[in-house]
Amino acid sequence: MNKFRYFNDSRASGQAYVGFFGVDDGPLLVGINSFWKGPPREARLRWASPANLASPTQDQARVTRGVPHTVETLLYIGTEGNTDGWVKVWLDGVLILHFQELGVITDPERPFIKGIHYAPVWGGTNDSVPATQTLSVDYSYVSTGG
Image (cartoon, rainbow, N blue to C red; front, side, top):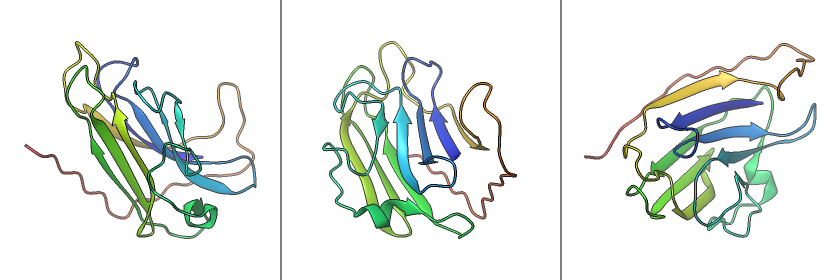
């Protein structure tokens, strides 16, 4: 699966993996794995989550292998120690994820995102890749509000 990650200083919070999740040759769906605190308390935020304020169909959240897609994310980290953060993700122009009341930055962490990382990954520890993987990024634009 391919992913890109936003992270702060600590693994305790301030990290999110926006990625394409699925198994082997099965369907891939855009989702978020996070260490965020606050509702929704689940670490895996998916299109069908009851806390998702967007209302996509499963087909709209599906990523087709070998086909270029446009993934846009908008993340507000909120204020440290509070659950006032939110995230929105669009796939090919359709809002597929929208979660609010997220505790992205906990006390006493610094209230900013330290880095963004793109990486092709597969499975977990000691897993093997059954085929060659590539991740191609044509355009990446990051902006911050002040």
